[in-house]
Image 1 (cartoon, helix red, strand yellow):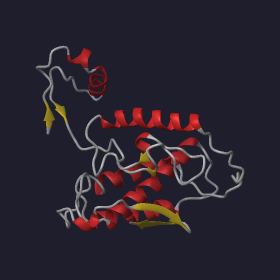
Image 2 (spheres, rainbow, N blue to C red):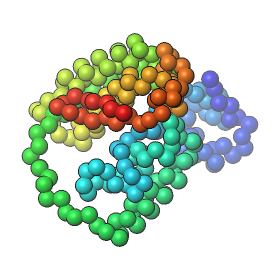
Image 3 (spheres, rainbow, N blue to C red):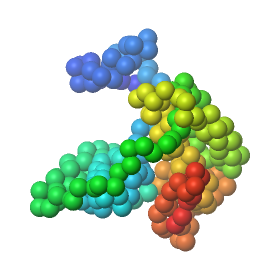
Image 4 (cartoon, rainbow, N blue to C red):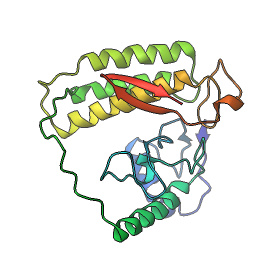
Length: 221
C-alpha cells in the first residue's frame, strides 16, 4: 500500500515532520510514493482512572494516553486523544486545586525488583509487531506469550538500573498485559481483532483489568 502525495502543493511546508521522516528513509514524497504499513501508535488501555485522573493508589493521578477512563470505547477516533488530554488535564488540575491529597508516608524505598537489559527491546518489539498486530491468531498469541516469558526470565536484580532498562522492563510488563488480555477476550471488538472470533459478543461488553499477583499477570473482568 502506498500514499500518493505527489500532487499536493507545498507538501514540505504543510507536513514538515512527515517530509523529514521520508527523506531520512531515502524517499522524496514530492516525487515518489510513500509506503504505508501498520504500526502501533496509541494504547487504548492504561492505568484505570476516574475522569479526574484519580487511581486506586493514593496520590497517583493519571491522564491522557497513560490512563484508561473508557471515554474512547473500544477504539479511538483520530485526534480525540488531544481533546482527552486537554479535558482530563483541566479536570485533574481543578480537582487538586480544591483538595490536595494527604501526603503518603508508607512508601518503601527499598523494594526489591528485577529488570531486563535494554537490548531486549528489539526482540520485544519484533514479537509484538509480528504476533499481536492488526489480526491476532491463537498460535500467534501463544508464540508471543512464549517469547515474552523468555524475556521475563532474563530479568535480574543485577541489571544496572538505567532509564533504558526501566523502559524495557515497563514495555515488557505492558506487552504481557496486552497479550494476556487479547488471549482472554474471545471476540473481535474495536481495534482488537481475533481471527478465531471474528464477531463481537454481547457478554464481552466490559473492561478487562490486569494486575500482577505474586509475580504473575492476572486478568479479570
